[in-house]
Length: 239
Image (tube, rainbow, N blue to C red; front, side):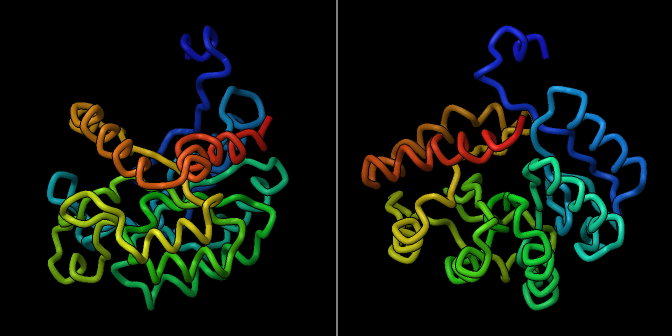
């Protein structure tokens, strides 16, 4: 917060991520979130864990996932308020049960066309799944965090097998299907690192270096859009 005051144009602060949400977002979450957006320096909603599979390096749950229903009553109430505030919201959902979850998120994105939704990691999905979302909903942005490598940390082997792979091959070259997506939707992708815990910050330099190598494979205009211009546009919509 002190750094935000010293460098107001260098920090865009979002509301905190809650790890204990289940079913629907409670009234207390709505009150705190809206209060911090209206009165504080917060400019977007940090990740709501709608579909978050248990990870080998994280806490385990009886259900094997943390989940919030994207069509729940309070979720809709919150989205109505966020749309009025023009505050982007991160909707975290992983695609290991695409048939169950995609119809619900399709409805959510469609119901609030003037709200910007940010989809972290593209849900660890395939290029086909990312294309489905991007082509049907112009209000959805994708962050590229963790997509520089395959994700194999889910505790469930069955769920892991449903995830897509990295957007690059073993040599670090962007796969053709993802390059086609970037060419088609250059304004819809944003660089990110997901450095939300100490062990992620320890890898930060390597992750950034890897992404610089990836962005070098794109045209200069595309690289600039993904590296910072798209994010500037998205977060610049707020106060």
